[in-house]
Amino acid sequence: MMFPKKKWSKKKNPNWPIDETTKKKTKYHSKTQKCSLGHIHHSTGECGYCNNLLLQTKCTPRLVKSFKTQVKYSLKVNGKQITNHFVDFEVIRPDGKLEIHEYKGFATAVWAIKRKLFEALYPDIPYLVIPHQPKGRIRIR
Ligand SMILES: [Zn+2]
Image 1 (cartoon, rainbow, N blue to C red):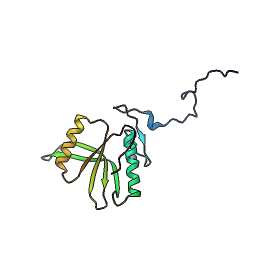
Image 2 (cartoon, rainbow, N blue to C red):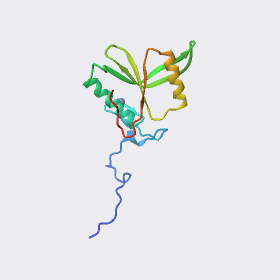
Image 3 (tube, rainbow, N blue to C red):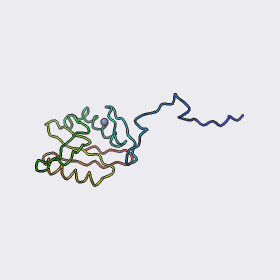
Image 4 (cartoon, rainbow, N blue to C red):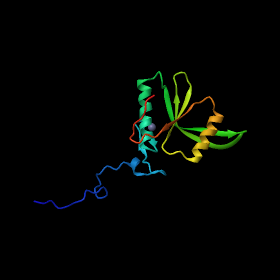
């Protein structure tokens, strides 16, 4: 006996779970995703990195005390406000020292300038660029 061909449609079935966070596509065709802390991240990789940092605060608190996401840094030159830079991750070490972890899949020209301005204006804060890992693998330092 043949079953009638019926397509299992997301639209027709109201019980199909639709994840609002993965529906939208961003500018660089990466999917937004929610991490364990409930942030909406711009990519799966960035989301994975956030989960990884959270794990580090629990497993290796001697290395990572805490961290914040999307922290605003004002970029001022000679007292004049140029722009703001929202960094992906501001990592706080147990000694209180800050470190910036920027997860990058695609380096834009604007970001490159912001990074240079940041490094010039905040020389005491190390700025680490975390290259996108194509298969979602993240190096643990
Ligand atoms: Zn997160």
